[in-house]
Length: 31
Image: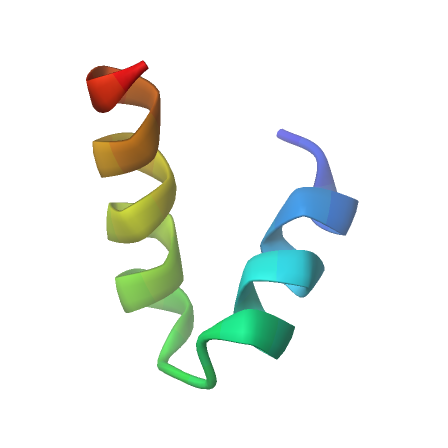
């Protein structure tokens, strides 16, 4: 997985890495 995407989400949403991963998965499913 691209680390840049995780870092970008972490910047927008300062939350634990697990939460960021859940958000990424949710966004992918929505798309």
